[in-house]
Amino acid sequence: MADLPRTLGLPDFPWDLLVPAKRLASSHEGGICDLSVGTPVDPTPEFIRAALAEASDAPGYPTVIGTEEVRRAILRWSASRGMVDVGMDGVIPTIGSKEAVAWLPTLLGVRPGDTVLVPEVAYPTYDVGARLAGGTPVPVDPTRPETWPDATLVWLNSPGNPDGHVLTRGQLRAALAWAREHGAVLASDECYAALPWEAPFVDEGVPSLLDEDVCEGDPRDILVLYSLSKQSNMAGYRAALLLGDPDLVRPVVQVRKHSGMMVPAPVQHAMAAALVDTEHVDAQRRRYRRRRELLLAAIAAAGLEQDPQSVAGLYLWVRDPAATAPDSWALVDRFARLGILVAPGDFYGEAGRGRVRIALTATDERIGTAAERLSLAARES
Image 1: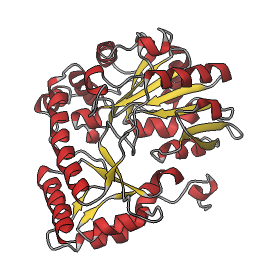
Image 2 (image 1 turned 45 degrees about the vertical axis):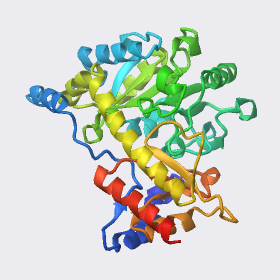
Image 3 (image 1 turned 180 degrees about the vertical axis):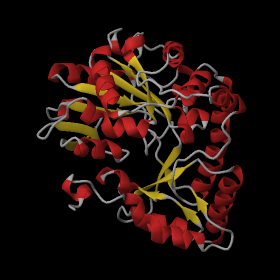
Image 4 (image 1 turned 60 degrees about the vertical axis):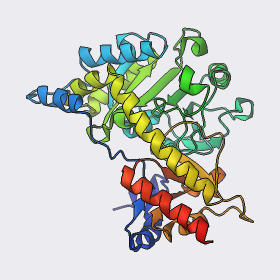
């Protein structure tokens, strides 16, 4: 049988390359502090688990489009963020946001010869999704649409993974103007929007492509993705959503019906409960803020530099200002010798070379241990 990943032009799975560093970090006498992957470790809130249990008697098939309950909850959530009302036909639940990112180009009809623009520093699945559809992914600077080539689909990611950059309202408006002028769909992955750390986003919120004052009340050509994995510790539930232009959502729904892409009914009920509660989101953000501040202090003590534009999300985006040449893997090795595993910036595109991504998704004990090791190494050097 043919090597399908090669046939599709897919890259090697990057995390396989991290195995030697993980082995080195795991050999530390105090155990590994794995800060390489952004998987939540804190408990799923009890009220969400109770909602899942309430709906666990679910003998029938769920609907692709979602229950009325979950779609109304999505609309209430989006309205609370100041987003335009896209109506019931403009929202659906998805099986996590990675699934939606990977398959959206295919569902939108991207074909061989079509160009898909992806952020130059980005989560690899934007690139992979374009390739799965047969399209050509082209990395671009998301803040400079005047430099973009013609394309069928454009991906934005704000707050960004891995870099934590946030696109301003002005930058979002410019991207949207470009997309409409060029007849492209503009898709925005906003799954870290509940985790701002710096002004003005802490007080004003992270801007969305669907904000009334960004799209001027018109959701045409826009799709937004969001995930409950980060804000609600529901990564294991695969609970996410897509909303936007109903004329784009409808054909996506039709293909999903044919392929059986359904969110389980109990998960939809749990999503509805999570989307209308803000207290648990605030509590989780406070946990991540404490971990972030502890790591930032240790990073500074170690002579490393956090990207000043990294102002939201679940990661630090760090470089060694003393390095004579950008080398992410040298920095990965430096952390691994301290028993700390981080991800090389190279995983996220050529523009990420020289940096590492450090996740906040570890227990307080492991975050504290990592910070202590960095600070101790700095004092001993």
